[in-house]
Amino acid sequence: MKIRYHKLPDLVNPDGHSWYPFLQVCLRQTNRGRIFLALVDSGAADCIFPASIGTLLGIDVPSGRPQTYYGLAGQASPAFVHEVNLQVTGFNSWITIEAGFVIADVVPLLGQRGFFENYRVVFERFRLQFEVYTKMDALRPGSDRGY
Image (cartoon, rainbow, N blue to C red):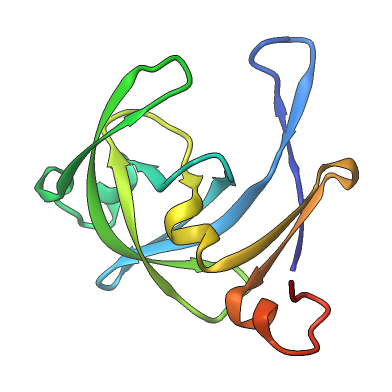
């Protein structure tokens, strides 16, 4: 599936804009689900979401396994890890991942553990698009989406 990059105002240069690989996903725990955009981030170790999304899903966020994430400048962000189900919009399958819910207003991130373990992603920044395939599609013999 091919997805266009999203154009957003540039935070460094107020007169400009930047392009980002955001993907629409649904996250759920039990029967409550929420659809939102998340940044596909190959540099993120884990899938990380704001605690507010966890609360919307009915998760008691502070009851999760404590985890600390560190940002670009080394700032610590406390989080709590929970098991949730994730579905990429446009695919039928759901995957179960462990995700960190950060007690801060952060951009939802789809990282190495959880997301990149289950999907093949091809970034084509020069075309302002990226492609996402399920692991099963990518590993299918004879598939042009394979490795």
